[in-house]
Image (cartoon, rainbow, N blue to C red; front, side):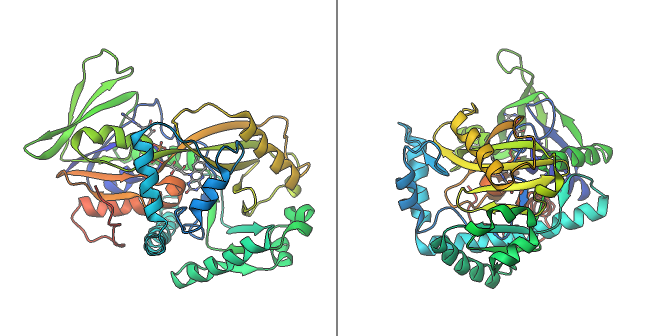
Amino acid sequence: MHVLVLGAGVIGVTCAWFLRSAGHQVTVVERQSGAARETSFANGGQISVSHAEPWANPAAPAKVLRWLGQEDAPLLFRPRLSAEQWSWGIAFLRECLPARTAANTRALVALALHSRSVLKQLRAEIGLKYEHVERGILHFYTDPADLEVARKSAALMRTLGCERYSISTPEALALEPALASWGDRIVGADYCAEDESGDAHQYTLQLAEHCSRRGVQFLFDTVVRRVLIEDGRCRGVEAVPGDPSELPSAVLRADAVIACLGVQSRRLLAPLGIRLHITPAKGYSATFDVVDAGRAPTVSLTDDEHKIVFSRFGGRLRVAGTVEIGGDGLELNAARCDALTRRAQQLFPGSCDFAQPRYWAGLRPLTPSNVPYVGASRVKALYLNTGHGTLGWTMAAGNGQLIADLVSGRPTAVALPAVVA
Ligand SMILES: Cc1cc2nc3c(=O)[nH]c(=O)nc-3n(C[C@H](O)[C@H](O)[C@H](O)COP(=O)(O)OP(=O)(O)OC[C@H]3O[C@@H](n4cnc5c(N)ncnc54)[C@H](O)[C@@H]3O)c2cc1C
């Protein structure tokens, strides 16, 4: 089969790899001049099964209301006069019902667990070399009430097969001594040794090279304008090189098409009557050069109080987090950028060159349930692998393999989520 993969982010490239490995002829179509230039460029780096719980949970609506209008809030909802935004918001509220949260948690953990093991296998099999650390994820708390909630979450995670354990502050400091200067404020932590962290951008570039060597064709600087449907079946796409303004488009024919377009998936598929509930959830990261390795963390960390994560990529430290819903601009908000640097400096004084931060903002393709669209769409031969929100890096390997199995008519290792449009 000839398969077109739309989008060369971490999701599209990984999917292309597994489709090629399954014996298909694969072409990847990407509007940027290289892979991983949009949301997969500078994320938090965590392969985080242990925190795969959805944001939509019974406690979320009160938190979102409390943070309204607070510029540096961890989750900021900017209400706009947009039918799309409001319908997404209503769907989010529905997913906050306890039964929905429980079902979504089960689906997310199953996908994430599978994906983490597929990633480990893939790395070993082809010798992928990107900055990564296999020392788990340590989540630390400064508020006893939040720690109590976390203990229950950890217990739930264990029943779902994820080995996340509550640990004491001394145990946390023994795992990550760089936290010592903040030790007297930390009330406890939880830890998942099997989780890991790594540079998703480097991984995607490396895997794209492996794909090319195995015969995957990449059409960069090529914008997909339209998905072609003939006789009720997807037959390919109309695409145009470079600036899509006035140039005539070319038809790229294929036996199957996989949409991996991140936040753009909704817009491209809407004319087909496929209504994806995906909203851009903007997040920020700051990357610093490490100047004193002993003072910078190596275990990937989640700072619960500030809802930010830390991942070490060799000589760099990445800090990432915050969520802004309401708009798709990529401009950098100074208050949010400063908050990342301030916190990194506070926790790890002297570890990095904090005077030279490299700030970045990206748009997470977020569904109300956090569960991605992975599977067949209702248009024959058109598949979805999109809407991974906060967990795209975590789920890329597993979901790529699941789609390749589905397209190839093989049974999938994990049940696909029941959210296919
Ligand atoms: C601050 C931040 C921190 C994060 N931290 C983590 C983390 O620690 N762990 C984790 O698992 N996830 C994390 N994420 C989420 C993760 O980065 C995303 O889920 C993931 O990158 C999404 O990948 P994608 O391939 O779907 O989207 P993208 O990387 O955006 O790829 C989509 C591609 O489609 C292309 N495209 C779009 N429209 C067209 C078109 N019409 N024609 C051709 N090409 C097109 C785009 O150019 C783009 O390259 C974080 C995200 C952010 C913003």
